[in-house]
Image (cartoon, rainbow, N blue to C red; front, side, top):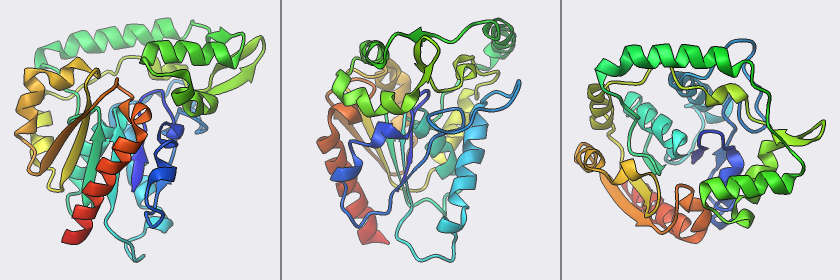
Amino acid sequence: MVFLHGWQDNLASFHPLIPLLPQEYGVLLFDWPGHGLSEHKKGDHYYPFFDYLDSLHQVLNHALLSPNEERGPLILVGHSLGGLVASCYAASFPTSINGMISIEALGPIVEPEHKITERIAKSLNQRLNSAQKRPRIFDSAVKALQLRASINKVASEQLMPLVARGIQRCDGGVSWRHDPKLRNEPLYRMAPGHGESIIKSIECPVLAIRATDGYPALRAADAEQRTRWFRQLTLVELPGTHHCHLQQPQQTVSLITDFVTKIQTRT
């Protein structure tokens, strides 16, 4: 099982789940570039969405996951951004991925074609302005944790591992460790037709976990349409907000293990 964390999060987003999983599961977690303890991109290099696919491809083709090694089914588990990446990867390599678990994500983010020039102009101007901004400094780690808990609507103790990995000491206190360039709007988003094509190309079973108080777009009419494009979809709602897997770790793991067991019986 390869766990893919969300935007401006880090691999500790999944720490509450790992001890609850069956011990026989092989588990791999990593920080996306610019996140957690991973290096930032140099100079003026940013973080376009498709680069995350390249990062995942390199991880999966590492020697430890080579095709010659005996292993069970390969399952991607993605939260938010991680779920978007997982859907595109599973669609592009349908014979390599045996299952996908998507938490608070339902296929890639898309945007109407006519908005492309507006997006390019806005993103380029934002890059110029953001280069002049100074990183935010907190008096203590507790202040950073409190802010993050308030924004995510998650209890501080549930966010503590994620925030602990996501901050660093600096002059005057602590600051976020992730690359500030991550906050810039992307230059490009896929058109609706691309999103439909990707979802329809996912051949493996998919478990989608949606929060009752998560992103509204995941409960909109467009999301309902998307559910009909998946070939093998199980959609479940959990109580909580966008980080519902932190709020309901036991329920999340129960859903995951049931899903994996069904896949194992097929392979």
